[in-house]
Amino acid sequence: MSDPSSSVPPADRYGRRPRPAPSVPADDELEPEDGGRGRTRLPRRALVAIWAAIALAVAAVGYLAWSQYAANPVTADVVSFRVLDAERVQVDLQVSMPPGSTAVCTVEALSESYAQVGTLEVPVGPSDGQTSRYGVTVRTSQLATTGVVEGCRPG
Image (cartoon, rainbow, N blue to C red; front, top):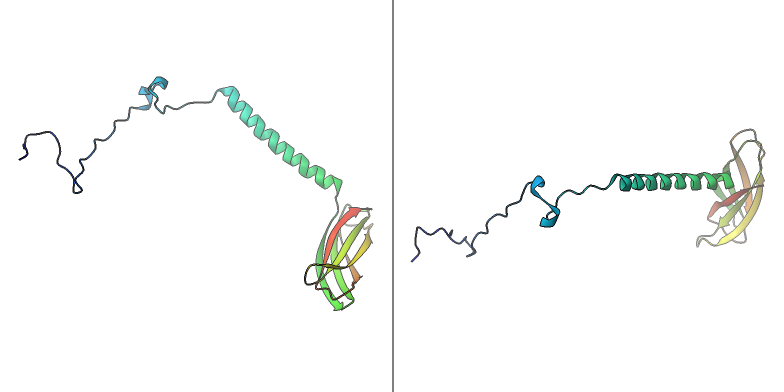
């Protein structure tokens, strides 16, 4: 039988012997040659380089956004549209641009399958305010189901 004075613990309920808990040294006891997981700090130059790279990336994104707006300061949105009949659609659009400037907006009529069935280039401006509303009627080759602004360019 088994010796009651032995130092080996009995097997658990699945027949395995319990494993001893690994001993973990304190952080100040770890040394690189131990292969331990001591805390490593980046050198100050590396931290400065990382923060400089982040600041440069943020500045680049800001510059690209600003230059995109400066290249085309005209934006337009469809406020509403109404299909008048099989050959016409009424589109109301809102155009934002610097006061006193002009632009040309392309308005399209689309069919149920999103095919272009009509288009119209609309000169807009100049106006006294930043935002102006315009209503246009686009002639179509077949029944349109929607009207959209394809885009605007300074004119």
